[in-house]
Length: 201
Image (cartoon, rainbow, N blue to C red; front, side, top):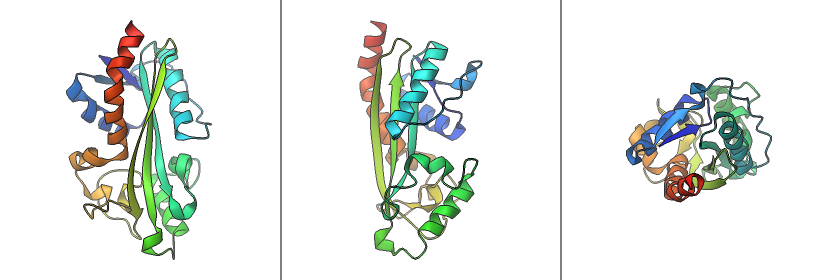
C-alpha cells in the first residue's frame, strides 16, 4: 500500500519509512508528484496544521496522505515554541539559530524548571474527505549546552531522563523506539487498516 507523506523534510521522511516499512506500507514523498501546493500552516494547534497539509496533498495527488505537525513545548516558556518550533528564531531560521534562541530564552532557568516535551500529531486524509488524527508525546528537559552529533531540530538540547542521553546522542533505532513521532506513528499503524478499509470500501 502506497501512502503519500506531505512533507519536504527528508529527516521526517526517513523516520516514517523506517517505522512503517515493516508493515508493508510504502511511504511516497510528496516531491514525487508535480506541482504540489505550498500549504500555509496557519492553524492554531498541531492537529489543525497536520490536517491542513494532509487534506491539501490528498486532494492534489488523489492518494491517501499523512502529514504531521510536531514541535517542542517548554514549561518555563508557557508551551513555546510549540507550533512555531521550526521558525522560533525567525521565518527562515535554521536548527542552530532555533537552538541558540531557545537556550537564550532559558538562560538562568534552573534545571528543575526546564521540563519540556516533544509533541507530534499525525493526520491521515483521503481524497474523498475521510480523516483522522493521532498524537504522540515524549517528556524530557532542556539542557544548557548542545550535546551529540546526530538527529535534527532540537535533538541536541532535549535530554531523555531515562537514558540520560539527548536525542542527538542516540542512534536512529534508539530514538525511533521512544520518540514522540514514533509514538504517533505506532498509534497511526493501529488505525490505518480500519481507515483504509473504510476508504476503499
